[in-house]
Image: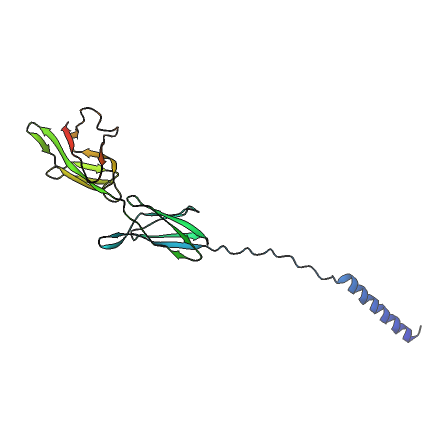
Length: 224
């Protein structure tokens, strides 16, 4: 074999080797792994505001008012400054209710598309004064008793649970009494409510006063 033929054969072998390497060693293009779509971010907003009432001296905050978003059940209670805040609400129309003992309930509808302020003014429920004299019957007649504690759970200050004490004339007075029956605890050491029939006091030892507008309700005690 001449020199030229040997060169040609060598070139052919080189081409064959290269061709084989290309066919067996190289891989075709790979498919990209599909990426799961990113879920949209959940957007929520804050509903906040102030709950107040109008008084003789102007607007005043109401502490302890309950503000409720009726759809989600989320609630907030106002602080001493009357402010509330309910976070985590989505964009939609919502019904908001505000309640507090001694005030008319209020309901508002608000459409939220951003953080929203909703101020609400409440009106007090009509209330009256429950008052009277605590006394005892002695040999000389009816005598007022000073220093008697009269406790009303459902009347008194705007939140109820009020204690008052009779003065030297045996007089007591409870504001914020609404129409209806109000059980009263009436106590003083050495005395009890006079109840000869056993029908005036309930099982807890209370006597009930029925309010119809401003009401006078005198209470007789007897010495033990």
